[in-house]
Length: 167
Figure 1 (cartoon, rainbow, N blue to C red):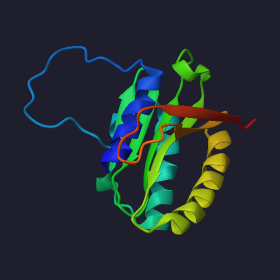
Figure 2 (cartoon, rainbow, N blue to C red; figure 1 turned 120 degrees about the horizontal axis):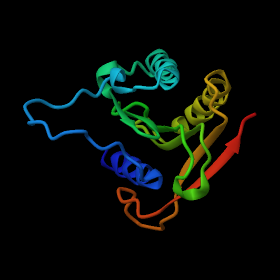
Figure 3 (tube, one colour; figure 1 turned 180 degrees about the vertical axis):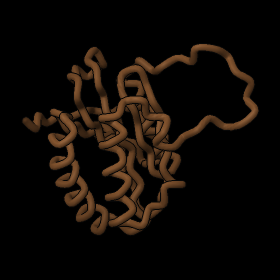
Figure 4 (spheres, rainbow, N blue to C red; figure 1 turned 135 degrees about the vertical axis):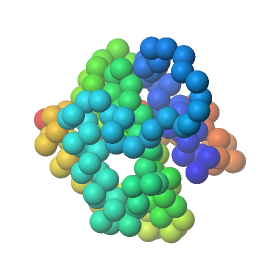
């Protein structure tokens, strides 16, 4: 899970334009992390379909999903051991890696079920995303790859992004 969070953190830093809070509020409770934090209705509709896919195919409970809203998009991180994903949807341009707007970026996938199982499920999940994107006016599907040659897979030092135009 630490690797997934590190990769998502690196992917988010690619975009670099996080929303800043309008005022300092006392930290009495943790901020909400459910889908209600996603302010863009188009993005929340796309994330709702992804939620359903994860629940139907892997039994991922909503409690294992975390969302964040940004000025230039939103992210979803699954903390489920069976099939955990990190996704970011960009709605504006000017991020690094020359990504345009309307991009869904798959930044990480992990599983406790082994590499062969994960490879088969990744193919299914990628096909699902390729069908989902045009439905929600997301023109590009991007993938972040770890470029480091570390012996320890828990540390991501640098990511490369490949982007596919869907329509």
